[in-house]
Length: 388
Ligand code: AOS
Ligand code: ZN
Ligand code: ZN
Image 1 (spheres, protein in one colour):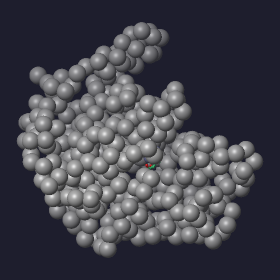
Image 2 (cartoon, rainbow, N blue to C red):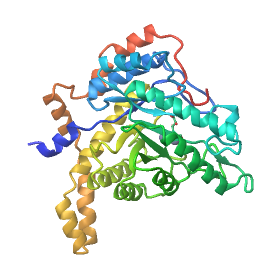
Image 3 (cartoon, helix red, strand yellow):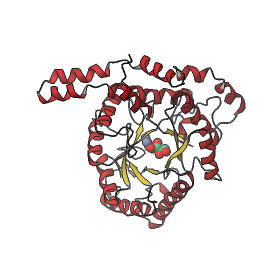
């Protein structure tokens, strides 16, 4: 008998994690970008690679796009192409961080003409969403200041609200805006959306179609991220996750690599808060693969999320509640840790086989011939965008 109950397997079967198109391009640090053989040369090839991840894992049914990194002539053609490969086009990510005009801000800029330009970029992103069928516009702003006194902190919040409102007003009935927070980088003294509270305040003022995006790498060391997950779910404002791992800053490493226990704790709050397989809460990866191969890196990532979800589902909630209610601290902790320490990998492999998937998706991909094929066919792959 599998350690995973039929009920838990039914939940796991519905799990879907959106992949970032930029994870398939070359990326690196400001010191060096290392190329990988077979790197996609255009958005079409990024989508083909993302479809491989889904083919071997059945876990990655959508690909997030980034404008302008993924600009194409026809987004409806791109949509058909993706659908033919078995994946949907997902969240559209805007970019206001690679233009000289935005040196001192975009949606918060003092100059109304620059704010207008940044707003128009987001309206153009919504045009793309109309063609791709994407639901979510994800906004991460690289705005802030480096020195005390440099910027009018409050004025910038007011201008941000005004700019976001203009973007929000253009959303279709079934579209949403998700606002991502980050407490540093590229500005280091202040950023205009540094934390979940600011994002929550901004999106709450907009309306029901605006939600918070939580990137796991965007918190100060030691932050209790699962508490934030709980609170946003409680408030009905957790719109999406950008999953990744960090050791130091915004490392964008493979989710679950740096701290699997933290991922488990986050996913437990997701399960408990009704956020799993909840259409309101998009699971996305926001990662870059600097030294590892990209497709295997994404396969490892979605499997890590699946494994920790399975472990979170194993928590004996009844026993946990009983221990919590009776104030039995160690018993409660033991229930929690028992689930975390359970190795679900053999059960997941067996379950995969029963569904016609390879027991070991990584091995199956590596043996498929696809890595050799793309290495031979593609020359001059693109940079992911960062630092480009
Ligand atoms: C930046 O630090 C953020 O994590 C963004 O979510 C993202 O990486 C970027 O907008 C790429 O689209
Ligand atoms: Zn992110
Ligand atoms: Zn980030």
